[in-house]
Image (tube, rainbow, N blue to C red):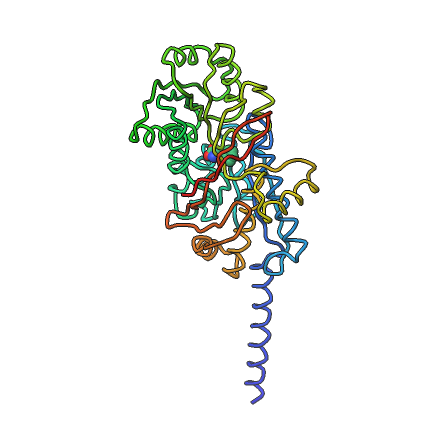
Length: 378
Ligand code: PHE
């Protein structure tokens, strides 16, 4: 009897210490989330805007008690807009910070660099804004919460045809998967629906002189020019086009979305048009409320990346809540099951390929402002 009591007591003591240990080892006091973004360098405005949105969402969640009763700790690394750097900082965060998920990147090429590392480590990665289809094709741990470029290219192609621009020249940044893809998807839709591609020209990120390409484009007398790259080069392209007395409109994608586009281009972008994820002129209460909070927090205007950065955190938080854990495979399952999540950038449902289907907006540059023209549903 005595021995049995002792055994029972010992078992209870053992069990409770084992239990305590597993609490200490298995459960962190915080939920650690990583973010990688171009806070500096050639596309700094992308990283800064998405970071602000991300930060604002984390602050709001923490003010409301965190997720699963835990505070969120956000670790942000700057990849400096440099090739190779996204892989380096993501590797570092996965090995040192014990992060449960990674948010990033905006630019497709940098998301493509980081995705295989996240996939291999089974750490879910959510790109807020990378639109190239290849990003989520890397594997089942890679998600995005925005539309993809086969859609965006179609939206631009439809718009060009609707405007009666029958002959369009294409200028592509061959160093960016985003630009290469967008040009290709535009061409596919436009070409198959009666449009003529006048000429295709290319350049590399960081180039400053586009006169040779623009001279070749001018010779074909196009009705418009698709400049599918990012804002800095596109702004310079617009300026140099006007210097060469090319007066036709330029057409672009979400990569134009930066206040710097106008700083670089000045008046050269007047009347030009681009597709995007979000418009500050949208009068819906959800967007107006977001604008108010963002302006008071950062004293600046949000753009598409701010809204997508914010939504990426909220969608992750929703998945963690539904999973009831931050453990990789369970969190992956919950993310993949994201359905009808109401965000700033619309309702997000992730499909079997872990992409979102959302509307695009068309914006027109007028008096240096991005004015809302229309919404194009998928
Ligand atoms: N879609 C762009 C890419 O894939 C990034 C981007 C998103 C830029 C949203 C501006 C606004 O590289």
